[in-house]
Length: 96
Image (tube, rainbow, N blue to C red):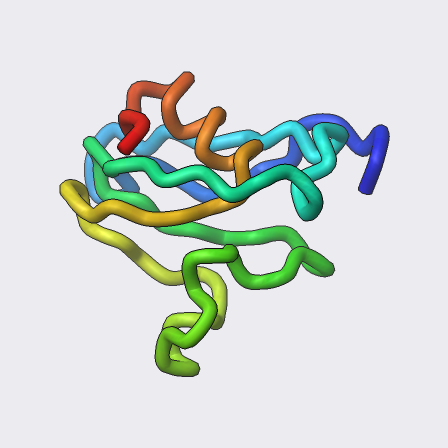
């Protein structure tokens, strides 16, 4: 995915003032260390085709590994650094 650029990976606050979240797919999303964030808005993750499940979903029940799925505000998640950065930049999460 190197050089792909921003791709939509989900929507923050999907039932309110929905904010599309774009992650920089050119930033080595699968090789950078995962990052923990605490969501400040509800998060509906919709990973693009070809993206693996988030690092924090290892060992989670199978229903949670499918996309899209919603994660409520206040949850602390481990995700790809590019997604974490995009959530923080959109004021939808803080670093945990």
